[in-house]
Length: 102
Image 1 (cartoon, rainbow, N blue to C red):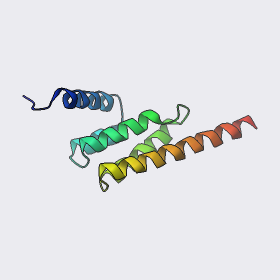
Image 2: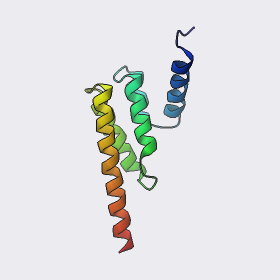
Image 3: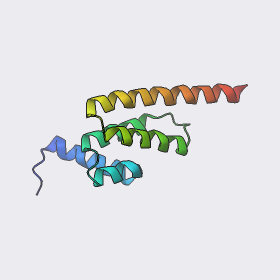
Image 4: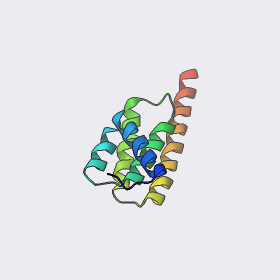
């Protein structure tokens, strides 16, 4: 039996569902106890917010970098790092779109 409250249990289910649909590096690191559930949730949210036209390979790179960072950073610092990663990805996607229009 779990001692999690309703909101916590709901967050755990949402995280498990998101990790079941991909994010292998995050799922593996969480399962090995290398990152916290809170950090894994930050990575999941960041992946969700990546530009739609970003390639799967680039999405994997962002995830891998955030997992690496999550092993060393507390969740607040990881969230800032994720925000920077999202900004970089959005800039790269915009540059790629502009290049294709030329």
